[in-house]
Length: 70
Image (tube, rainbow, N blue to C red; front, side, top):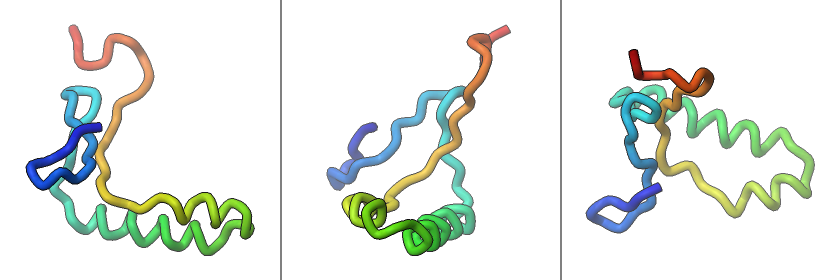
């Protein structure tokens, strides 16, 4: 995590493992999906999830240790 010029928390890019995409439609859909998910869980978990809010998204490559290397 890092902060931007306004002091907001954001995910720090770390290419090639963590990168941001500029597709606003994906961001809007992810935000909507997180709201839908919250409404589908039991009350105890919903209370916990209410402490969080969707602010940023990035793609992270997981798997083999040679990702991004030759």
